[in-house]
Image (cartoon, rainbow, N blue to C red; front, side):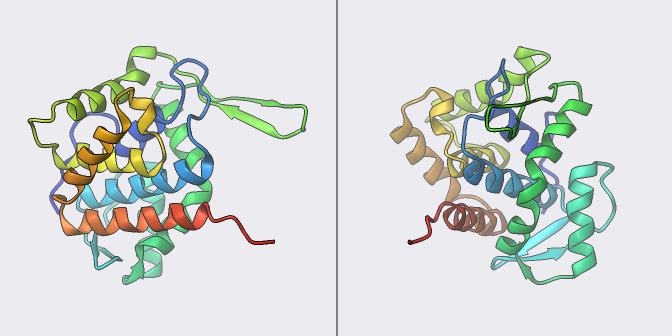
Length: 217
């Protein structure tokens, strides 16, 4: 797959920014929804950049050269080390536990966010990611909402993938658009994606579903 990435934020960065409040940095979706979607965004970054290919739900290395990015290179390195043919859902489960912190710190390094932590009454540490520049932090949400509103124009591959990940992460409401209409537009755009990305998004959906299952008592 060719490199469809432009000079904007990385795909997972955009999803992270959409998934957090512009000012106080509070997550706008539960971790069991947002984190699998972020893991999917990392694999999508690698696929869009031609580093991996996904065929029938299985992941294969297409280009093992480092990308000079700690988050993507870490994921790619593990895929190279373990070898071809493992299913995408397994890789999403592998990436998911650490992806929130890793992508957040990538945005801190880029100067977009700050990392703030405090201990609450329950003694659990709560981490927030407030923006340094509200305009930059809001830009991915504003851009995606704008392209989704233009129902007469097809979504490009990158925007369609991001929109599908936003939906998987339970964040359509964050876009400030009618949820039912947006969900329909995302579904239509998703059907036109290359098979590799469609397979990946199916794996993201399955990972989210597995993470949200309530055990029977």
